[in-house]
Length: 177
View 1 (spheres, rainbow, N blue to C red):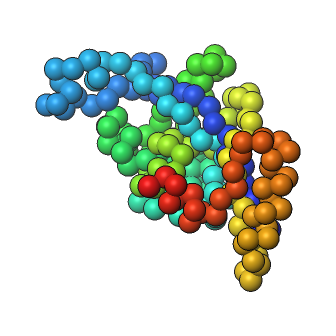
View 2 (view 1 turned 30 degrees about the vertical axis):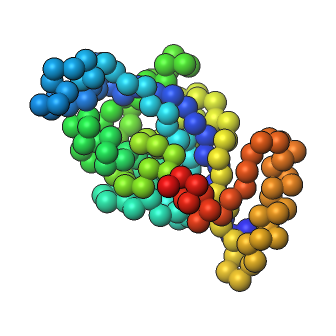
């Protein structure tokens, strides 16, 4: 194994200046209640520098490595919907834990593998948020056959989570399509 990273999940709402960040009103949403309701987001929590080194999220601005320092990476889709920009400071409201943390948007990405928000593990830990890894990536050394490693990982993972599945990135992307 060349590199491995775990991804936990948490639920957050986003705030700015003490108020919920609501979707930008458009001609379509202006007459609906969609623009008036704060949304809870399932956010990935990971060592974003490692994630940056391992995956291709089609980063359009900044980098996951920068977001690992600044605190948060967001999808182009969500940033557009909420009227956010690179470098904006947001408050992450971890409602379940009753904790808030300030973060700066350090990356904007296209590929929404696990959702619209990734929080740097260090930001979550500093806020006292418990992290239970629910996903993971493993990169193999060049020349290592994938199938035997996948089989061994599946056997190990099965002991911890019988319903969990080990997939290659290609297999996972096909499942998500």
